[in-house]
Length: 218
View: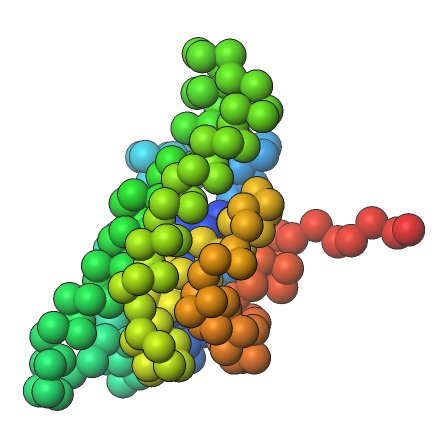
């Protein structure tokens, strides 16, 4: 498999988590968003939307959009499931709850602090840095407040590690990047603490990616 992504992209990050949790080997192919590599002809031939991530599996046509990639990986490689079996008691209901948290983050939170949206606000509405930061804090805060109410009281989001955690952890990375306060979300912080000790989440972290810039000398 080949994963085209960017180390700091939260949508790439969530796919890396799923790949790591499933123990799937892949080649990471960096797409430098700061240098507009996503708009170059070669990458547009892979993903006409000019976004990351994109996944190529066994030489097949690229799959784009992280929710579709994650669903594909769950169905194609079911040996390490990240959704409970429909045969389990309340399995269907729990699957729906997990997908609800994933969709909340992927559809209602992450897109509103995507770099293309922030640049549009700056260029077309002359928003200041303070206004941009307030925008980011508002939408991330609203989303995390809802997630805090939706997840369980023990373990990961829904007890065992699941797709929901693969979406939540990158969103927390973004929240910390933008200095969004997290003290009001003890259940979310519990999940983050567990993930910080889990090898798959550690391997998928942006700081451990081949395209992450080295820390400059002090």
